Amino acid sequence: MTGSGRDGGYALTEVLVASVIAAAVVSSAMAGMAGALRGTRGAEDMQETLAAGANISARLRAGDRAERIAADYPQWRIELSAVDRPVDPRTGAVLTRARIEHIAPLVSLELIYLEDGFIIQDDE
Image (cartoon, rainbow, N blue to C red; front, side, top):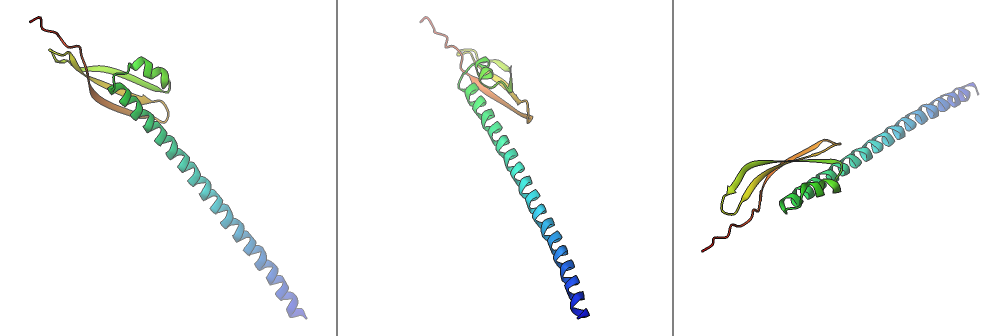
């Protein structure tokens, strides 16, 4: 009977070790899933930020005023500067450089677009 008592002791140790290993595996899996979820959320945030930047640049190219756009997107900074004024002296069209920056996460976009000017009427 002494032999069976020793087997019972080993079985209990084996169960405890197996439980510790199982707990470590479950803990590691949960930590990995949490990290993946954080990464997914970060990717979604960046995707939303880039979509907002694309929308701002589209509105600028469409002729919407920078002040109005800035009011709609308070976390963005919009800086405009002249590239070449006027591009076409007859129509007054100009090239404008826009630098668009998001505060956090830091995203910076730069674009050059053509703004329509006024058309000069000839008195002929």
